[in-house]
Image 1 (spheres, rainbow, N blue to C red):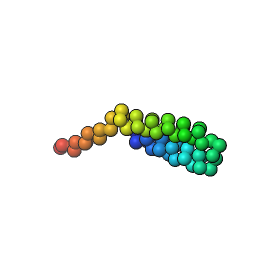
Image 2: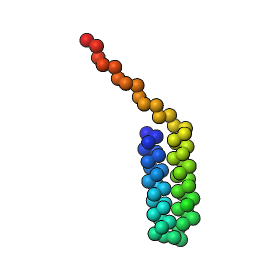
Image 3: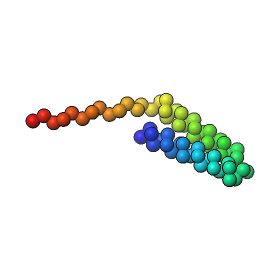
Image 4: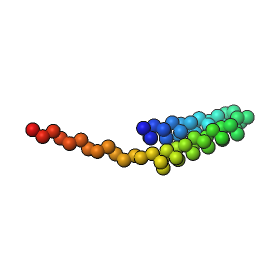
Length: 61
């Protein structure tokens, strides 16, 4: 799930960059929203635990 959160934030940052490029009058809004999403992605990377799940044991007969 953390990967999904980071991926969503990175896509949002990309959208903000495109918005700032195609609509310069929204540059400050895109910068603030993109910065917030970048901060969220960084926090998700640092705080959320990403230990891999324990391997499943084979059934013994």
